[in-house]
Length: 323
Image (cartoon, rainbow, N blue to C red):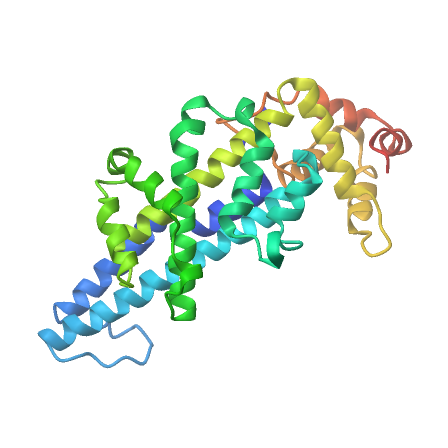
């Protein structure tokens, strides 16, 4: 049966950053073989000179590992930046205009200062409110993940801009939250010692593999938590899911001056026999976040929704959806 399990912005984010720990560990395994003196396979057609064995090989591998870790941190932070922008802009999630303004970086805050990525995420959290989020998450998990986000963003900026200025240091609120949550973080994220991580940041050192994997994992957890809360808020029952389905299909099929592809798809689907339209409707819904899933976040779409829509004449569907 069809239901909403994740939004399109979260789906894109998860697709890009998912399995990051495994991917980074794969790089580390390959580099360890380089450090141990292994050569590249003959069939691998790239230009690469094997370093001298011993310390030179270890040094080359360590430098490459650092490059990969820093790249992953920058990539992950920028992906989350895009997620926030797209997530807040999803009309059917019903965020307030001020939330869209802040999360989408459509302006600046007090003193003409750009909104930080933590402030943008916090705007979404505040909009969702405690009723949409589990109490335990409100009290500990969310504040901790927002603090990790702040740490990651500041570390990313220090790496990219090559400085550790006052505006790129974490504040006392972030530091206190992370140290308060030290035991939770140790249990949740493979025995990470957050005090050591903070010390590395303060000293301007590069993040370790564990630092990066923990920070990337926290981004995934934060985005998932926001995604689930937003879906549950707007889709508490079957009738709400049906209204969302209508809204999403309208947004996809309604013609505009600059884009008539959706209208062409709609006309093509309704040129088929009523019994053959269901597949086209189901495919369109799947591309709009309503999919066949074994892990639904929303209630399931009623079994008759797709068939009922498919049975209507094109003019009736256009009228119902507001096309």
